[in-house]
Length: 318
Image (cartoon, rainbow, N blue to C red):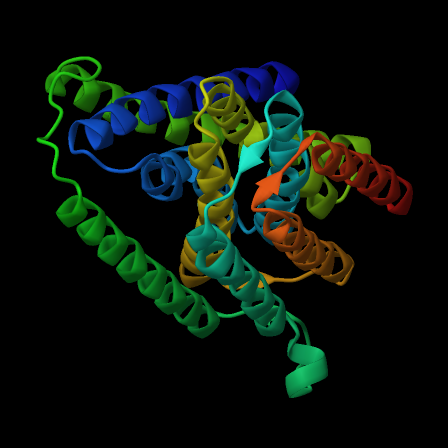
């Protein structure tokens, strides 16, 4: 039964995110927002909703290993699998703003989270834990990111001389219903995934952290994979890369910050290696993006190989 609930939960997460992204993206396009900005905001928030729902519910249930494992694992999957697969399908052109601002901000967010996790080494604490105070600090960084995004949107709208495109996609009502219905499916699916994945982990003798890093991380990253691959096939590479970068920032700052504010999150020692892998992969993404402002098929293959190697390591480690 737990396996059935896990599959049904993932289906609800994926389809819910799909409807959310479709409805919200159509609304954004109607308002003449650039594809990159749509990727950084509407699509990123929509595809990161599964991670947010899973993490917050896990924090309430006291499954802290799932929270950090899900966030770190999802970000690793986003950089390696999502960008890798998307680049193999169609090379991604990266805008200069993304290289100079968004990816460095994602790197900063990852480093901030890692520093706040290290209580024993930095503060001689009894355990490594992200407290409610740490959660509020992380949410302040998220507020700064939102301010940057809104300023970017304002400049984008003021520079766009075209009229608002109200003829794109379905009606306003249908798009709003898609968005709300998608969120409801995401919330229900997230609760099912948390409960069933935790039960399966205990039954198989797996740690919560490993479940978060693998099963839950890949499952909740499926919306990012589907959205980015679809965007690349339609020639909207900037939306695809915006989705990945925006999702990673959202995962660290909003998901971790909110979950820690709900309930302090204990950080397992194993997760420090995974966290620094996430930081290293973000640096690698920045390096690849600075190379002619393009992520080609060769770079995509390197990222996919990196994930396979990482997956083999954490399975052996467990």
